[in-house]
Image (cartoon, rainbow, N blue to C red; front, top):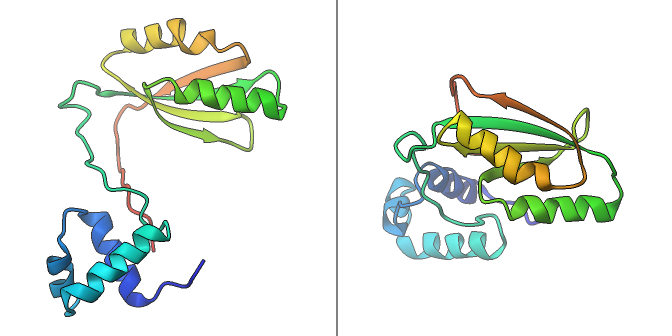
Length: 153
């Protein structure tokens, strides 16, 4: 990985806060011209520093206010079983995030649903159908205290 300079880092910070900022707006914020900012952004995209641009949606307004944290331990841990589990989880559109963990549990899932009943149905009809799950433990978010998508750079 190449070392990013201060301007690159400033561009990344700006885009993390608001990816709709135009090249011209970013250039004005950094007291530069648009052309080199455009080139830097393209380079950051091509090198993989910027993976994609997204809109962050309001889960409450979209009627998905229940956030479940599901901790999964597998029965078998060889590479084939882990790969199969990952493919099966990726196919479940309800799963927003999945992390392979070190520690007491093997996987950490974040799932947003419209109700506890919907979550129960999801576990009963979809998640429990994954054969290699040994232990499944769910916790529910009472209040989202703080959340960000921004990396500290």
